[in-house]
Amino acid sequence: MRLTFLTVILAAAAASFIWAQEPATYVDQAKVAEAFSKGGSLSKGGDYTASGARRTGPGQVEVHEKETDIFLITEGSATFVTGGKMIGGNMTKAGQWIGTSIEGGVVHQLKKGDFITIPAGTPHWFKEVPSSGVTYYMVKVIKP
Image (cartoon, rainbow, N blue to C red; front, side, top):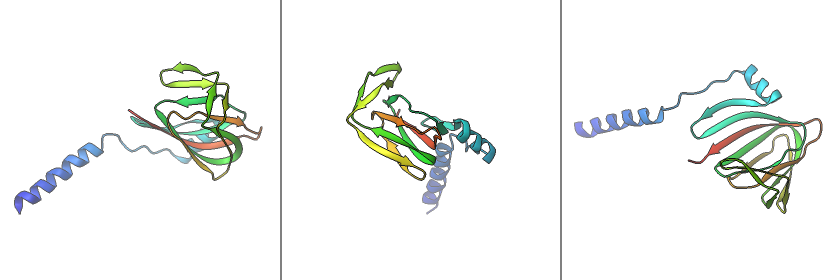
């Protein structure tokens, strides 16, 4: 019985050491509000980034080979396209592509409260954004 108890204690200690490799990140309300008004990082780790983002116009088509994007729309609206084929694509840095449009794809009318996940390797594009803009919480999950 003692050996089993000692084994459990050692396993728990080892697991807590393994799990606690990155410290918790706390961001106060003022910095969160600033990140959502101007766009900016909230937290970064070895396999993720979390940011507040704001757009007041359309963007370019993007493809991230190793990053899954997760968006929660917090204010505003936008026409967002996912999938299909990127047109005019150029690699801007390793694993990151920028293009001019998407052929095919699925059109989403994003609005406050909507949630969308864009898997790594999927073309995506803020095609239309009204001048009032769109604000969203963005998490990037990075594949090794």
